[in-house]
Structures are given as structure tokens and as C-alpha cells.
Length: 84
Image (cartoon, rainbow, N blue to C red; front, side):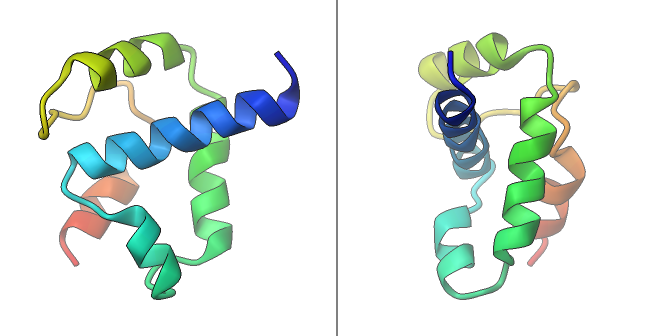
């Protein structure tokens, strides 16, 4: 898998996990409530995860809400954004 393809996959995982946490991250980016740099750092953290397949399975099988897995490297970010 190429780096760009892998990055695209992890971008989708971050957006999907945020969505399941009740966070419209794309909208927050458009409104500049979250900077591009901060979003890219979230994708970088996801790229470093050893369980992306588990996240994909969770996202594919879960309903509209999903408890954040303990291993998620973006848990603090999602907690902060959910509080906004």
C-alpha cells in the first residue's frame, strides 16, 4: 500500500471515528474550529496505530454511536471536541 493510500485510509478512520463520537470533524474544519494542522496531527497519530483493521471493523459493524476503543490515539482530541 502506498503512503498516500495509507494516509487516505487513516483519514477516513479519523473522520469515521469522530462521526461515531458525535463530532462533525469535517464541519469543524470548514468553520476553522479545528485547524488543518491539528487534523493532520490526528491522522499522523492514527497512522502510528497498530490496530487500524480493528477500527475499520468497529466502524463497519457499529451503529451511529460507538464507544471509543481504549487503544485510540485520538481519544483526548475527541473528548475535547465533544465538549465544544
